[in-house]
Length: 142
Length: 227
Image (cartoon, rainbow over all chains, first blue to last red; front, side):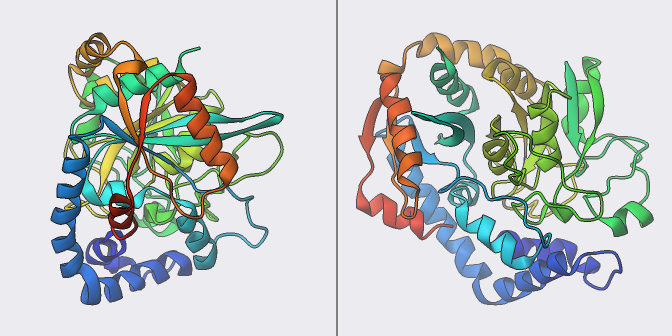
């Protein structure tokens, strides 16, 4: 849905000099998504929102990693469509955006001897930002 | 408070570049602030600057070859990506240049750079914060504005700038559920996740004594089909 909407709103930039090929490729992909999947995605969204509402009758928040793996290094060859696709594949963020719900990303140490940090994503019911930050406060507390 | 603002959000008198060479060279200066800055202006918050991003907020890497990629100094010298698209906002907070930054999130653009740079980021409910004066990617379906910060108190302050009365609502939420023991968390395990990440999250939730329940396969199937 995001790329389809980007095509709807930003396609005027497709023929502009100074817009990178990677971005133009993404906008062009949006045209395909718009023509083939946009209507179905809009229909599926209300069902997904209903599913989330049902889950939030049983729990206050849903917890998933923000990223499935640790972030990669900056690539030597710079930005490319393939690298953007690789990063997209790490993300657990699109399903929440699709529903329109709020979500908090909060750092969590990997633990043990590893000094690296990952991120917990807490997802809440619509308009639960204050409650989400309360849960974040408790996670952050010593 | 020092506030940084993603360069997708209008500030009066400045070109909103959207991270694009083309827009930077041809765009007009914004005639007014974006509506989401009203709270910051009303309280005379010091806006320290506009922050870089992936071109047109189109991608999660945070890389930008024209303006340069914000340097993620988190995790030592590993040269990790800053994440995007709100890469500059995350780096501004992580490096101490700002106390709070505003980012935008369409499909992860606040949360992903927050995760990459070791800070917090809040994706707000769609339509909670005005998008008037924000460069559009998916304004009718997905675009949101949200705060990024190093800790919860600053995130609350940032959110209070975006939604008047938020700090009071947060205070009420703290009073209603002061302990993790009364908060139920549905834990979803996603395929392809590094086991060390899953363990870290499970350990963190258990250590704080949240009431954690594992979400079932039916929900997981719907999650997988909704991205």
